[in-house]
Amino acid sequence: MNVPTEATDTARTRRATVALACAGVFVAYLPVTSVLTSLPAIQQALGATTAQLSWVSDAFVLPVAALILTAGVFGDVIGRKKVYQVGLALCALGALVSLCATSVQLIWLGQALAGAGAAALLPVTLALISHAVPDHRERGTYIGMWTTCMMGAMALGPLIAGALVGHVGWRWIFLLPLPVALVTMAVAGRWLGESRAPGARKLDRPGQVTAAVAITALVYGVIEGGAESFTHPTALVAFALAAVSGVAFVVVERRSASPMLDLSLFRSPGFTASTLVAMISFLGLIGFFFVLSLYLGLVQQLDTLAAGVRMVIVNVVSMLLGLVMGHVMRRVPPRVLITAGLVVAAVALLAMTTVDGGTSFWSLAWRLALLGLGLGVAFPCITGTAVASVPPHQAGMAAAGNNAFRQVGSALGPAVLGTLLSIKALGDLPGRLAAAGVADERARQVVGAAEASGLGAVARLDLGGDAGRVLAAVSEAFLGGMRLGLVVSAALLALAALATVVLLRRRPAPAVRETARPTPGVAARP
Image 1 (cartoon, rainbow, N blue to C red):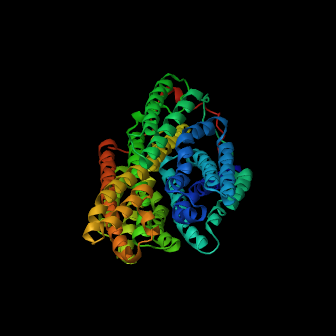
Image 2: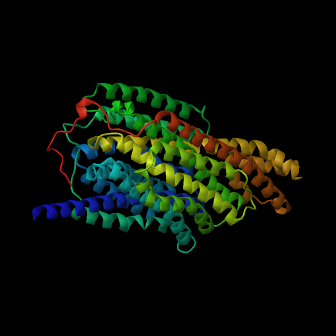
């Protein structure tokens, strides 16, 4: 009589753990697309420069990339429930600061706090699922649900921003994460059990410091290089610091008895492939979304809601696929799914190179839906492969490592592709203006404004009777830069697909170093 009761309690606890893990990743990703869609409104309200505006998004990405490995270790050592609660609290605090912000600098602070919270939630939510569902075949279903919630948050963001910015103002986009985070904290306090990584794992302070410095310096260097020049002294110093810190991190981890990132994880083809593919894919895709937001605003001149509706198509299709991908992953090898998904996404990006200022909603929608189809197939498998490739007690470490490389790619994408777009567009602009019949003096004024403050600054000039011809020339120059960025993004996805074919030759099998074996009876079981 007692066995069915225990089985029922275990199943109930498992469902609660998975639900809370999904809620955590939802809170972590909710600000990402809502803030991106609202950047023009924030700029207009606070009078922010283009460089200041770029840091609104980068202030979130930087702590995520720098702290995610450390958060995974803290979860394994002091308890995943504790880190989960801290992550939710930081997300709520960051939302409150941004909600009350009266300057762009306060938004930076709020975004940084939210980014630190996301850094805590991303690895620990996956580790909670891995701990609750030891069977890697069954785990794929729940990781599919986790991915669906992540994509759902990203899909909801532009719609929230579009509805709120046009009616009550930009700052209210930060309201929703606040009650969601607080309610989730209360529910987790009652229903989420504590768990840790088995064994005698300890905090790896030298590894944490060198990793944080290396990732921060790399991301900062890319951001500053994109804003100024990659040969600017600030960028060069940042890259040098990143290289030195990266080497120091490898040396420290190889000598540590309890490393933050066990380098022997990279002996697993599944973990290595999924991590490399995640970084390359996000480099191309986050760069694409950055370019897409500029296209919708600058070329198609859409308001926040109309732009949000178009941007949400990718995430809605991916989210719907996530509902079934967990079952598909149990029947089809991850190598096939990841490769097929990335190829479809690359084809979608190439199809985007034919759009222009007059492209209709439906003509754009099928391209974005095709991209969402590819991402919805590939991304759950990438995450699932990383976690399934290691023993359950190292799931937090694997999830944190995979997410850290993913965030580095996310930070590199807008800077690299934005720089390519700017170089191409500014190089084409004088010729476009001349072909449109714009006088030399006016052309010099337009080019000067574009070089100083970006192509968007041209629309704020008093162009008189030349406005139509100038704006058409600017749109054509932008489209040339956008097409270059799309080709590069598609090439990156094709490279990721090739890496999958080469590295992921069989189903991932957990295999890591001997010192990391679980000690029976140490971890609390859900």
